[in-house]
Image (cartoon, rainbow, N blue to C red; front, side, top):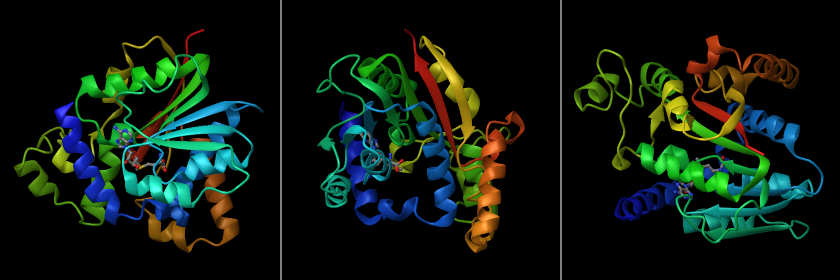
Length: 269
Ligand SMILES: C[S@@+](CC[C@H](N)C(=O)[O-])C[C@H]1O[C@@H](n2cnc3c(N)ncnc32)[C@H](O)[C@@H]1O
């Protein structure tokens, strides 16, 4: 649990000065939001209870509460909880508590129809911690319920933040051991903030759980890599782009270029 305290400090520092609330509001950010909502709406039914773990400022939690679902949310960083509360409207059936994805003991077993884990796995670095977070999400979900787990994908980020935008020096990352110089597989620690994975890492993480994978989705596809083009699209072109994206985002030959991936699975009955 010591490593957890370190991570909380690092995340608090990052999210105190990062405008998480705006992240999914730009047009290129909307691709991930609309894609995730598309899959959430495929599975939610009237009266369902949702838990969002690592809810940030509540973009998904609020959207779902405003559609009439009962939403509980857990978030690690106080600053994000403050913004989450400011964003809450009167008609929402919603509750947010401070907590950690690694320990959801405040929540009963088999309670939620859907559990969203859209963020904590970006900031957990060992297989053991990641499995603990997935295991907790599974525990609180009803039998037959649906879990969404999001990941940051290394190749998509390397192409976008590295080779395209130069925010990351690929050469330096190799020199520091954060990237393998031959395979370009990533290796992160808490100080690096984001844990970058490939699909084989997600498959290894999930291999021990008795779940049925329903979808593995390139949630933002190439939207970050071509953000200027997406932001410049008129409404009609953007709608066509979203139609293209939703029709291709599960294609195996496109999965690795996404910056984020969504693993959607069903807990066994
Ligand atoms: C990138 S944001 C995503 C927020 C929101 N789920 C969304 O998709 O818009 C990741 C969030 O997960 C939170 N987080 C990271 N690790 C966590 C943990 N171990 N337990 C709970 N929240 C965590 C962060 O503080 C941050 O608010």
